[in-house]
Image (cartoon, rainbow, N blue to C red; front, top):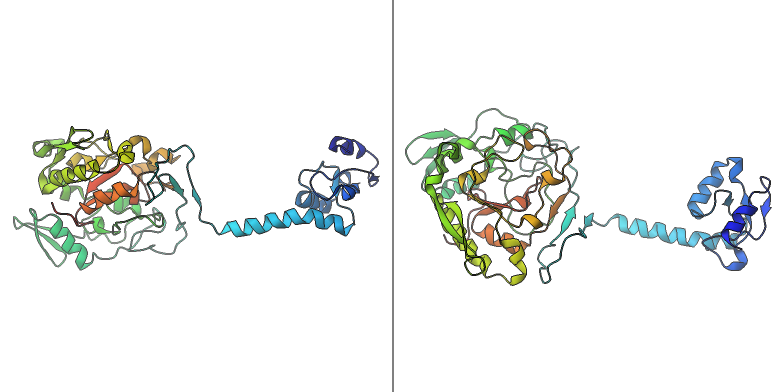
Length: 387
């Protein structure tokens, strides 16, 4: 009997049996009958049973008959669904963005990936390396390791001479304290007013991303303005433009010029990166040209902090295939410090690896992700390729 007929038959008096009312989903034809008109009685048990075993049945037809064989037929799909849900519950929350265009042959990293970051909002104390846990909560910071301090001096050989205790020694003999002595800092303070020691933590980890960055894991996002102004110049006072030189970007495929500072060998390294990227297969071209920008004297979007682009040490690529946390966040927050949405990335690891071996960190390694962004930070990522 059609389901509509069964529903009409259910309009009999409460508690009466509806003959030949077919079960809409399960059981052989011989068993698809024997429903009871019970919904009008307000029986909560029958309501829960209807949702549990017969989710698509009319509201008046809710109680399964006492026939055990009938119940077994009906419960089998429900039990199978429960088992499937339990098995799938442990799967990692990785969701491919259907709107992204896949690039054939790029296997080292997903081209489009949305990953729910591990929730550390209730973590007690720092999550790792002294930076992490709840954004905005004060946290202790580990003192920079000897290796991190050596990398700092080695990363700026024309400017830095040594580390003397907790003091940075410049080549002109002047000294700068590594730690400003303020102790525990909130994430906002770490980001807006970092001392030099703050900028060395958390550590930057090169290579493919195995797990998305946790809250507070933004290596290189904090920059000490006084330090970078001294090394590269203050763009607001014309101190950077005089040191900018041309770099031919992808000479074989694109051949146009971009600007980068010659200080600290940044332009030389970017030129090497350009040639290596130029040699990649054609399937990577969409990410590489035209570039999205290098030098511009500006603040970071939504903040009053100087952008790395203002020093001529950064480049953005692949705007159309990039993900930026502020584009996805419903409330970016004051000074750019709000908790970021789920981590996303569409930039192939083959491109990231070339930048990283020349000392350029990638904004895709940040919890506050900026996957188009690369900047030269040798103190966090000592170059492994020659200059």
